[in-house]
View (tube, rainbow, N blue to C red):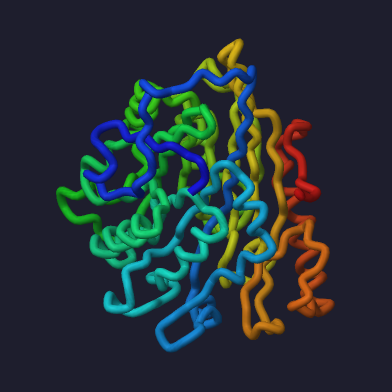
Length: 387
């Protein structure tokens, strides 16, 4: 965990069995002598695990290593002050139906070890696969996240946990993160346990945003799992949900579920502290076994936020994006899935074929065109490289 302080709106952390980060104590806050604070928030799309992925990750009869997948993007993920993505699977253990891919996912817990090691601070757990191993799968996944000190949002182990707004103090800027899904693929949520997953309910979302503000959130980030799969522009239901979140006071809105990238845009906020908000309708797949054009392309979006302490104003300084593409095949290390960024100079373990190169470059170009389709704002720009 990077230097992030988490505060929850009800009780202390151990009560809801969440990562044991330092609890925010306002009485010990220190006034910074600097006139501005700058932070970076990085987000990726759907973190999937189809069965070929865990087969490739096997390093023993009952052990797995997913870390090599991220070797070329790790520096971008861990260099941000706060990094998150959508965990579109559960980690319910081999004893609960075995490890499986589509249509009912259950992934080895080592998958989370890899995400932790490359810099993920929080995982969104509200999506259509959250209940793939019923209530037990929800609870066991939360347990595995807690063991690794990874924060989670969107599924919960109790009503108290659900009602506890995730509020993060990132270098002096307080940001609330909320997450909701359109549904659970027909998997039944047990009666009386609606707290297990946040579904898209506008009354609930409005209440949560108001609660976050009352607890001191300076920015509110909403993650939606919504839309139609494989459609490269937002449908009406997505636009309606985004407009509702803006109306309720959301500042940043991130989407997932279509498994392909959709455009990003800026909007006028109603919160007052941040005059221009940002929405990315769908982040696409960051890692999966979906190999077709558009489905094999991903993106890292890094939002640079500046707080002027003298004016008590917050602004989005710029939004950087980095196109990525998933390689699947033989490397010097054996069979691997490897995420390749557009900035990559070389990976000596991979001998890309002409077909691979064509697919990769096509993916990068598709991403550049799609992400900027709705906005010519100069703040939205491609990352060229970082040190």
